[in-house]
Image 1 (tube, one colour):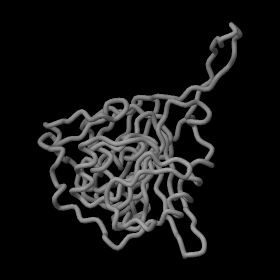
Image 2: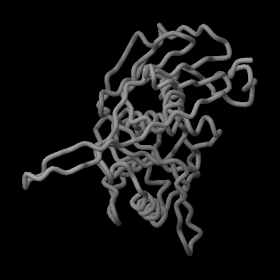
Image 3: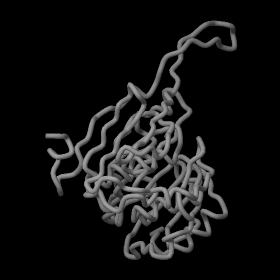
Length: 284
């Protein structure tokens, strides 16, 4: 019996667990001329095959390759639901991830014929029309985020031991649940993923949400990267009403956030932030 058959319908896909070490040690010469050992971030090609058809090669840190493959398929609207996936197998000996669907033989040529190269680090891509399906997105209006909840999230992210602190050269994304009962605020980080491109990090979190069947309606998405159109669209597709970044935003990201009703907060660090859209959900 194959791994795909063993998973069975409704039980989720069969998965490998092929996480790579995120950093490597190399020798460098410092400003004094002394040789020293330093950590640098990994970067690996991972070619995605769906039902034995090559789709795309992703450059990744390799921390969550299975979730990355699933999240890529989800955010590109190439697969409608996690129940359609039978298996995800990562093999670093050939730098490939093979996704098997339950139906088999899927043809994505029409969908992938149009490709938009985005402003994501490492050249992110969006297949199909960039603005397709935006009109159909409806984010929950009753979700709330307080100022104290936001501060709790920023503090929780700041305290994490990260690849960025050790080696730099990566972006981080987090999905969190923020609470504020009036007397105390807290933030629970459900997932934190780092990668060489922010588009990979957000896709990996989308994959984790799919696997764990986590609803985004009451969650907050945090990214270290810019709030571009790609980030806004992916966040909205995941059903998350709040998008927070320590960085700035682009005009198109701002326009799409207003269109889909996303609450977008930028330049968020320590106690400072700028609320750009979706003010009605934010409790000062």
